[in-house]
Image 1 (cartoon, helix red, strand yellow):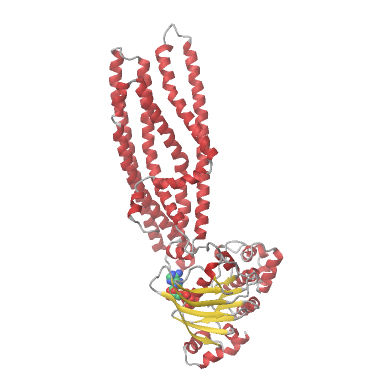
Image 2 (cartoon, rainbow, N blue to C red; image 1 turned 45 degrees about the vertical axis):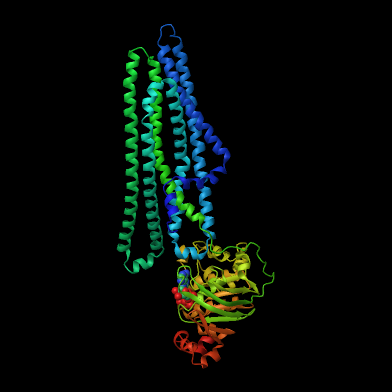
Length: 600
Ligand SMILES: Nc1ncnc2c1ncn2[C@@H]1O[C@H](COP(=O)(O)OP(=O)(O)OP(=O)(O)O)[C@@H](O)[C@H]1O
C-alpha cells in the first residue's frame, strides 16, 4: 500500500501501532474498569497465597498450634474461591472487550473504505483490503483481549512477587534480580524481529487472499483457459511464503521462550541452594524459604508468560499497523467545507469547461485534454469514438469519482466540486455497459436505485424497463435470488434490471453506457425500448455503440485521444470525410443498415 519511509521503519520496530486501538478501548470504560478490577483482584489473591503457605509451614505443624491448621486450610480455600471468581470475571470482561473492540474496528475500517474514492482502488486490490478487514482484525482481537490481560496480570504479578521477594529476603532477591535485565533485553530484541516477520506473513497472506478472490470471481474464464493448475501453483506458492514468514516469527518466539524460561529457572535453583544452606544454618525459617521460593516461581512463571505475550503483542502490532495505514488513507474526493446546494428542481445542464485529466495510476498519460462541451437540459448527447478515446472517463469525472487536474465540470451552472458528492450523485442515474448485479433478489437489485421504494414502484419500474415478463416467469418472481453478480441472468436481462434501477432512481440526468455485446434481436429491441422510456425528459449522455441510438441523439460528440474532434448530427458528420464517417462505416454498422437500425 503506502510506500515505506524511514518513519515507517522506525514505527515498525515498536508496539506503537497498538496505541491506535486505545480510542476504541476507551469507548467502553465499564468493561475496561471491570477487567482492571478483576485483574488486580486475581493478582493480589495470588500474591497472598505464599504468605499463607509460610504461616502454615512455620506454625501449622507445631504441636501447640495444631488446632490452627484447620483454620489455615480454610483460609486457603477462601483464597482459592476468590482467585477463581477473579479469574472468571477477568476472562469475561477482557474477552468481551476484545470482541467489542474488534467489532467496532471492523465497522470503522469498512465504513472508511467505502468512503475512499475509486482512485484508491485503482492502486489497491479489493481482496487485500478484505484480508485486512478479516485476518488482521482477528489477530488484533486476541491481542486486545486475552493477550493484554495476560500481559497485565503477569506484569502485576512480576512487580508484586519481586516486591514480596525483597521483603521476604533481600539477600536472595539480589541474586535473582541480577538476571532480570538479561531477560528484558532479550524480550525487546526478539519482539522487534517477531513484529517484522509477522507483518511480512500478514502482507503475503493478504496478497494471496486478493489473488484467490480475483480467481474465484473469474472461475469461468479460469476454466475456459485451463488456467487452474497455474493458478493453484501460484496460490500454493503464496501460502507457503506466508507460512515460512509465520514459521520464522514462531521460531523467534520459541527461542525467546527458551531463553526466558531457562535463565529464570536456573536462577531459582541457585537461590534454592543458597536458601537451603541458610535454613540449615538457622538464619532463615523453612516457611520463609518456602514463601520466597513461591514468589520466585510466580515471578518466573509470570516473566515466562510475558515473553510469550510480548511476541503476540508484537504480532498484533504488525496487524494494527496495516489497519492504521488503511484508516489513515484520506479519500481523494472530499466534500467541500461549505457545500453549495443544488437547485431543488435540477434542469440538468451539464458543462465541461477545458477539462484536463489523467488517472492516478497513469499520471503521465492524460486521458482528457482541455475537453469542453455542453449538454442542454433534456438533450440527448451521444459520445462516440475509438476505444480508449476517453468516453468513460467523462462519466467518471461527472460522477466525481476523480477530480480533474484542470478545468471545471458544472451541473446547472454549479461547479460539481462545490456540492456534496452525495447530492451530485443523487441527480445522476447511471446504466453502465456491464451492469453490476448483486447477489440478492431481483426486487432488491432494482430497489438499489431508491432504497425506500415499495413493491408497486419496483414493479412499475420493471414494467417500464421491459423486464416484467422475464421476472414473473422466474420461480419466485421478484423474490428470486439472482446469484453472485447475477450469474443466473442473461446479458439482456441484467441490462434491463439495471435500466429498471435507473428508472426507479428518477434522476434528472442519465448517463448511459451502451452495451457493445450483441444481444439477440428480441432482447435488443426490448432493451432499446426500455431505454427510450428512460431517456424521456432527461438530459442524457450516452456512450453510443449502436446506430439506432446515434440517429436519435440530438447531437454527437466524436472523441479521439481525450479530445472532441467533431460535433454535429449524424447527417452532417456522415457527409464529412472525418473520423465519424470512418467509424460509422466500420463500427456502428454491425451488419445493420441505418434504416433497419433506426427502425429497431
Ligand atoms: N482507472 C484507470 N486508471 C488508469 N488509466 C485508465 C483508467 N481507466 C481508463 N484509463 C485510461 O484512460 C484512457 C481513456 O479511457 P476510457 O475508459 O475513458 O476510454 P473509452 O473511450 O471509454 O474506451 P472504451 O470504448 O474502450 O470503453 C485510456 O487510455 C485508458 O487506458
